[in-house]
Length: 108
Length: 115
Image (cartoon, rainbow over the protein chains, first blue to last red):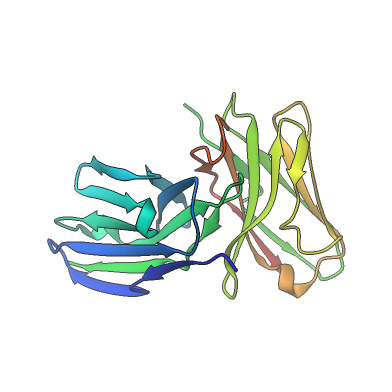
């Protein structure tokens, strides 16, 4: 079946470090979104990125649709970056299929 | 501007009772989605509305689950005869739906606990 896999499942970093989160998907996608779920459970849309590269401050994302993966880069991490990061894809329809997430913990 | 809102934020109910969860999408968003987040299953799609019609109900786990949307705005998710496995956070999202896979904006969720 259609799968969205994220790695690593857990990541613990010191404040100021950089990180790369990966999302692999098993089929062609219409779209891909990255979300941050904060410790209060709110899902915040970070990037809408079916292909190419986008940057927003310390965060950037790259999707290579032909190779079926996306990467989320976080630079100079801060404690407020802690939470769970999800990628979610549309496989030819409106619903989002979510990955299993990467839990990021930033230590002061 | 206002984001997606959901009510109640928390709901505790006894097994066998019915519950209604409400979602107010962002004004002007024609597409509305319900998802569920539970420990064992992660984030999973339930139902999608375009206007008042639901072209995709494929994620509803059983016939105890139903949803409606009126006036192209507010949506209600109803769970009848709740079971303990229904305990989860129910999330609503909306989008402009300018084609397949519009950017989705999520509400804060309703945490449902069935005792």
